[in-house]
Length: 248
Length: 345
Ligand SMILES: Cc1ncc(C[n+]2csc(CCOP(=O)(O)OP(=O)(O)O)c2C)c(N)n1
Ligand code: SF4
Image 1 (cartoon, rainbow over the protein chains, first blue to last red):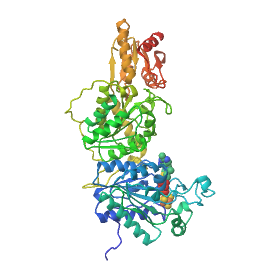
Image 2: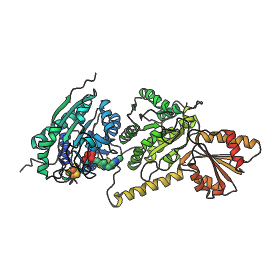
Image 3: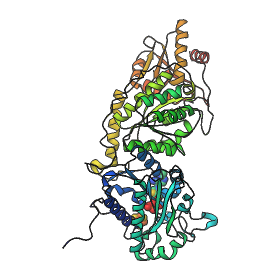
Image 4: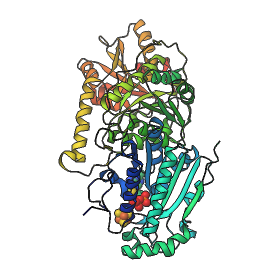
């Protein structure tokens, strides 16, 4: 019988270290599928973040480096300027991208750097034990918001795509999710569009993927997916946030 | 000007990627690179911070390019994170530090108070950079050029440690317009896409055991450093052979100390100079050799006394090592050094 569901060629034959129900594994898979489909495995150089996805190079079968926490877009900028005909993307969590690396991501966008960014928004710091992230919802309990995130003390969630959308150098922004098979398919499409944007030399693009971290949400994998649909998407609506550059 | 000499030294060395963030007293270097990179089809980026600049250099180096950043003391503090990662990943890069007074914002006058953060691994972890200490515009050029060869050869960050006086100084500079860049070593480790080879990675996280362990990685780094100490130490010994007193000074102060030696010699005093031209590796052996005779050492720095620690380690007799330093941008004058030297008896 022919196999209909196989591992993408861009993915190594390895067990990931992710918790059951984690979003990272799903996102790795679809992005590797896209790389296969575009036939660019040999032309890809990725930048892994500091965060749960730090070991991505153990799972991805293409060239990958690892940046200091948050400096991911700066490292990608250096690579892309030297290798303009390669596909260069960063893969970043919400601590990496929206806290410690806020300056780097905004200025990569402001420069219209021709790179792709996969931004995994799981609302917490997974790697360090489930602390508050800039994206944590108001009312959410985390390791450092034991009395929930209270705006008067902890501020408000950061909507990175909406913030980035005003930058002329930014070409394409879309928010997707992995809470259902249909949304996973949309995530795959969005990543493909982002990579294609780069290959067409059209400038900076970013896909924000809403992902579950069941462990630090204190939920089962199934309940975590349900929470995305019922709560998280209210704060982070899905869809294209920006398409088309205002660059001349 | 010294700053521009560094820039030209980099271009001649085949540097085709520069990222920097403005800070006095090295701004002329950043501006020079913005003009010069255009003509050689290189990349110039004015980054949003020193953190970004050093990480852009990290990225360019990952892709196999000769890359440089420059800054002055407060900016170098920010670059330390990146320097530690470059060291952990064994990536070549060149960093110019045109030192100014500190701590904090300090001032923009010349200083040598970054000796510790340059030579002792200012960032986290056990690592070293090769640190060149120019004392003329010519050496700003020569050492920057040389730094790229060392960085590639040893796969590590290399620093040129200058100060505001050298950066701003005007002096003639000589170089062959047709000079060739330092020998290009092949970089099979660079990430350019997994074409006709397996995918590879560049990383500093090491969770493995045995040969892949972080401890083993550190041992390898240390072996590399021991080799560099043997091969790359540079020092100028000036009228030191028969000297009874030796001034030890580097950079701008080394220059001033040289004039002190000449004027004292004219008066019949047997004074010499040891001018380290690399601060790491430090010329411990050369100083130790002199110390076997009955020589007294007088260390002069534009700091509270940082290099003096290394001199003491070489001499191993604290009574014979004295120190004079100016801080916060003060520059010791020739007659001031001479007077202090005589005061010490
Ligand atoms: C400079 C620095 N500060 C802090 C850390 C510790 N740290 C590691 S991962 C991380 C946050 C990761 O969260 P996120 O980016 O959301 O990724 P996730 O683990 O949730 O996928 C932090 C704070 C570090 N490695 N370096
Ligand atoms: S802690 Fe969260 S983000 Fe990290 S692997 Fe586990 S589920 Fe995934």
